[in-house]
Amino acid sequence: MRGRVNGVLFDAGGVLIGPVGGRWNPRYDFEGIVSAHHPEVRADRFAEAIAEGQRMLDAGVPTAAGTTAAGTTTVNRTEYHRAILRVLGIDRPSAALLRELEAPPAKPAVEVFSDVRPVLDRLVTLGVAMSVVSDTWAGLDAVLHEAGIGDYFAGFVMSEVLGCRKPDPRMYAAGSDLLGLDPGECLFIDDDPELVAASVRLGYRGVVMAREDQPEGTRPGDSGSVGALPVIASLHELVPIVAGTFGVSSS
Image (tube, rainbow, N blue to C red; front, side):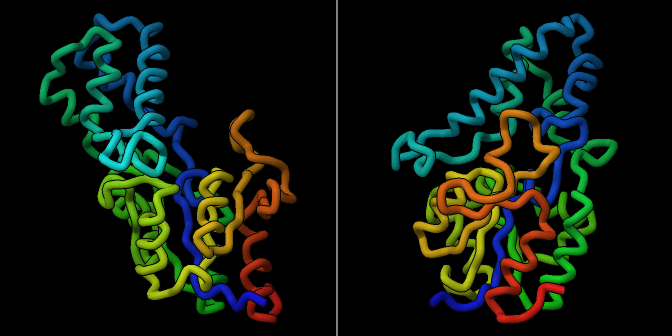
């Protein structure tokens, strides 16, 4: 019989936070910034450019380990923006344009889901340690602190900083190491079932997040299970899963 969950490793996007404007990359102010620098760019070109950027992000950067998901690193943000800008006909973007695209936005680019703070508070009460393990660029820690939830976490694992992406075992290990816990003492939650399944193979417990407002076609399934993986639609459902391993009430 497995023991209690003493630590939770959270993915960020889709679990803790969502993008303002409904799009992660590029962020909501991309078109406005580009148009301010290059008013000649037609609005109907942006969709194609954004799609090219997404293909680049999905492919990642091949490393010596190969070109599988476990052997890729997060694409450099500047190179990502350059790739999109090339599709828009901007082959030699100015330093000022690139700098503005990478600078903190005038308004927050993410919003914290309404169920996050009460659940994090409850996990703190239960004595559960927490970290964030996310395929993202450096700076996620600052984003979460600015959003008011950074202090809940013992640390942050960001793929650009670590040099690999999930499902590379190093990502999960870094998250549990931040808590000083073994994989068997930890639960990993993500909105990608494949990444959760990878964590389970490494000895972690796993839960899939499938928020009801997740864009159509991206939800891994209704609350229940994906294969043998439990699926939840709200973080509130995570509390009884964790508390149940303590043999205590989730209330």
